Image (cartoon, rainbow, N blue to C red):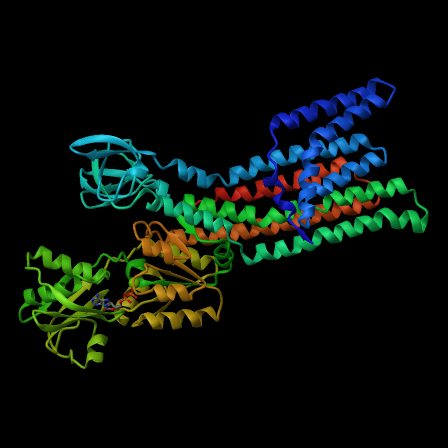
Length: 625
Ligand code: ADP
Ligand code: MG
């Protein structure tokens, strides 16, 4: 037989009016008992409460029982009937009334914990101002197609995702990133549904239909994450499923053994057994883990950290090692070409740019920008091939061109000696070859995120080992690691080498990999938790990550660890509190020291509320050491 006691909160939705009516009748009964000397009137009033408030409980309890589920509904029903049978009608009525009240309060509290999703929903405007046929008209967002242009005035919440075609403004993206500092936006920049246009007027071309916006995806992913179950949750579920039958069995023994074996008064022991029945519900225990997980996932999403499931909360809490990718993660990934060598430097840039126009690597962006700033003619390359962690190759004006690091040319068998190597001082050298011979080289620099230094130190203080993995050369790696205070690093890694590194780190302990999704996706997948930075605007990053940081902020990794550790702490507290209180009530019940109504008030309502409130404290953890 299965127990699904914790689901009692979703079955029946009673109204507050119902609870108040029961309270009034119950109070009338207690007063009547006090002022009259017949017990008939109070007993009729108690019966009224039990029938009025108890009928729906009994009905759903029986329904569940027919499906072979023991729920708290049936336990409460038995307790009320049992109490009546042994003449404690006031107890039966109190139990039914308190249980109704408990459910209302629990509903209220858990609704608040789940509120994050509804908050996200509210951020989506339902109407967009769209330009159609030379006019601006208001249409429901669901009718707007990609390619159409919407407009927003200062103060408007944006209805859809789009690319700005007109206007300069700043946008409050807190809805998605959790970052409250406004982001400045110009023509060509992406804007997102749910964010607020602050200063200027803007017109943007819609890029995604309304169900596909960043906000909608985040919302869907958070919902899925909240549904998912972590190992701890599954363990607690299994535990709950035999907890109830065992306690019921004990209750039966308590009811019959002492009277029949030891000649004790039957009524007393039946009463004690009824108390035990009430605490046989694992309610608080069953919600101990999910409520904390939902609370953690929801509050993370409010801070721009999308955790794709409670399993990752558990893993993050256990993290021993965090491996960072270099380019685009520890560095800004906004490289600049600051030196070109070769017989004809412009030819070198033009040639390289033709290939890099088809690559998504940060290096590629730097080279195409350089070519544009020099005003060079754009050439078209065909047969483009990408060698992750090495470089790119294609045909350009009928000739084979390769662009990449010295390891690429070693593999191609093209000697690079004699060409200046500017590696070191954080510089990266990229060679360009045509028809099998080097024609020149480019040197690039990246900006280190110096603010990451603080995060590296903060992780160290938490006993987490920080490692840097990079495909770049040794001297650049050394320079970056030194500036950020990272002791351990590995350079010259191809994407598959990064996977092997992550695998060997995992043998030492739970390993998190943080990357930008460029050339490190396999390593992210190999780690216990793959964290992708800068997921805003990147569909792939959002889909592949276990944890997605909407913005490029390393300190959010520390926040995610802190939040997860607290979540696991709250869960441990919830579980031990539930077990202790239930055991305590059971022990006291044996000696006849707990009344039925107190068992419901403390063991069911009180405990569940305590667990919910304790879990909601997670919302107070904020990013920033
Ligand atoms: P990281 O591990 O630092 O993020 P990657 O694995 O993405 O670096 O790339 C490693 C190296 O491979 C780069 O430093 C560069 O030398 C070379 N490389 C990768 N992609 C390209 C490209 N599109 N053009 C030129 N070189 C590239
Ligand atoms: Mg990278």
